Image (cartoon, rainbow, N blue to C red; front, side, top):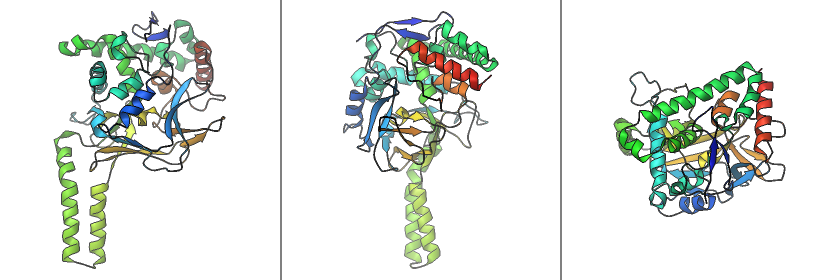
Length: 371
C-alpha cells in the first residue's frame, strides 16, 4: 500500500494528513508473528493483544487476564538502545541520545524482513512497507506538529498554548539541526523525513534506565550473579543452620535476581546514576494513565525486560473490554500534546473519527486547563 502526505508550511517536515490512511491495527499481525517466533523468543500473557479503542481511533493493549506479574517479557536482543547520560562527566543528559536512537531505528527498518526488529518496524509503520513510501505514517498522528495552521490557531487562546506552539517550532528546528549534524554516511542512508519520523517515535516511546550499558555494567552483569551466588553458598557451607548466614544468602540471591527499574524518558530530568535509553517492543504499545501503577524491570541474569502492573492499570472500557495502561511518569499537558497527541482525563475522551473535530476538542480542553 502507499500513502501520500501533505505538510504544513509553518512546520516543514511535519505530516498533517494522508490520502490513504493505513488501518489502525496495521502491522499487528506481522508484529505478533515476529515477537512469538523462536528467533525472538518474546513472551506475553495469552489474554494480551493489540486492539482499538475510542471508536477505533486509538491503538492500545487489551488485557482481560488475571495475572499482574510478567505481562510481557522482551528479550534484550530485540531492544534498541543508546547512552542517555552515561558518557557525560556531570551526569547531564546527552543531547544527541534521541538522534542516535532514531538513526538506529531507521537503519533497521530499511532492512525490511532482514532486520532483527522487523516486526517492531512493521508495527510502528502500521504495516506500510518502510521502503515503499518516502516516509511511513506518523507514530503520534495527533501530536501538534501534525496539526494544520488553522488547527494550531485554536491553541493561541491561551499563553501556554502560544508557548506550546513555539516549542513545536523549536523542536522541529532542533531535529533538523541534529539531522544536519549527522555523519555524512548516516545522511546518505537516512533521509531527513525518515529521521523526523523516527525522532517522533523515539521521543514518544523511549524508556530510560541503568540496565547494563558500559564496560563496568557488563562486568557486573557477568560477575555479580556468579560471585553473589558463590558467596552465599560459601556462607551456607561454612555456617550451616546460622540465621545470619541464611539472611546473607537471601541477600546474595536478591543480588542475583535484583532487576533494574526502567522509566519513561522524562525530558530535562536525570535520575540518579548513569542510564541508557531503550525502545521496548510491545511494552511501549500500552497507553498512558497518570494513575496507573506499573513497573518495568530489567532482569540482567536472563537478559529480559519485564512488565508488571498494579492498581489502575487494567481499566474497563464502555464495551466491557479492559484496556491495559502504564504510567509514563510526570507529564504536563504541553508534554502530552507535543510528543504524544493526547490529553489524559478528558470527559468523553476524544472519540471522533474526524481528525479536525478530534484536534479541536484537544485544543479546547488544553486552553480550558491552561489559560
